[in-house]
Image 1 (tube, one colour):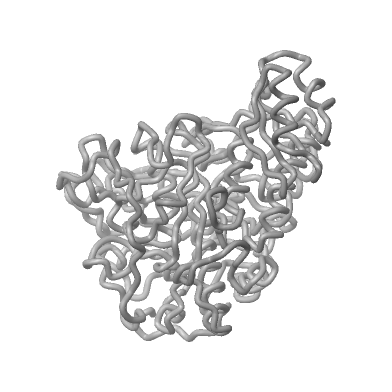
Image 2: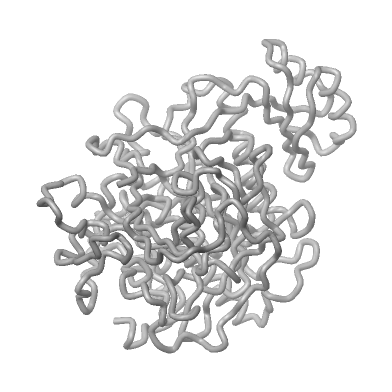
Length: 528
């Protein structure tokens, strides 16, 4: 079993000295900054005048920050932070990892090489009629997560997230996967990892399975030749924005650049996103752990504020450390960026335990571990063991899956791993051999966040339909959807469910997202 953690952008022991994030005044110009930084032996890598942020690289040296601070138009200098996937110990419940099972390969047929994806824009594809019956996708019966979020009534009413633009700021993405073809705006894809295009991570299992899985939870196609899984918003448009490499590492500057690109109006320098999904974040820390923390967190906050001003909903994973963000015994409240910085929908995770106790599987590993499906699913939820929590931080919860069963162990030799059914089934990644149809079970707040992003896409699409706004029409400069982030955030909270009442608020915030309650569409009989 591969152990793969939530993409936590851990605050490293030292800053990346040669790269800085700058706050700049409205009067600052890129030409003037170019000249000043060039005089310091460096270069400007990114300049966003509307957000008031620039990223520069200068030679290592103790005088670099002071030199940058003296540049006209610079208001703040933030040391960049190295970010990386933290090591995890599966036996340590306090650092419970996000987990992925690679046993879910469903076809050994040759497919496109993971090194040579389709780089041409694929026409976006849409359903010919509303989903008035259960999706025909082969693996949909094994997906408990959509049933928890309850989008089926909205689907039947024609609310599917059509043309809502969701930026997945993450690793590279395998957009050739059959469940993502027709869902991805390839022309808008961008990479902020130097020398790497947005699809390529070199290590297909350790790398871009993550963004692919996240994208599938949001928007995997429905009824596409009876294949695969179904996303919460199966007609939403995915925008891949790569900020982490194949080793799941990167830096804060890249994440901030990715947020600003995604939030900027559609064009050469912007993706025109309606929603940004961030299944990543810093590990929880106390402010004093970060030198010049006000500058660093200030730059992050500026990026989030810009996104909100553009009408973009930012949805972020709360993290997999299993800690109370409100009550650290040493420091009081903890910080985890971006969730605790404001202008985000911070998402914790819930999950079932032992949802399937009598599964079977193909010992050759070619077909899925299957379950004699209960009707209906026993969707009793509990806070995921690994999920961060805290009433002041968490806004809502989503299905992330639970890992209690796997940690309990005790499986007899040769027994099928039934515990994977407690995780979230979704799109995987190809292998070097070119296996074209792969799916993974995974657990983590990385999975909970895109479920909420999918629900948010349905909220936006519903509002557009009610107001007669065609989200698929060409979007000129500044043209957005008819909602604002506050309205979407309020809608998600309004319909959220607290299974045990107010006692659940610390774990779930306003509750577990429920699309049927939020939008008022009754569930069809087939969704029971």
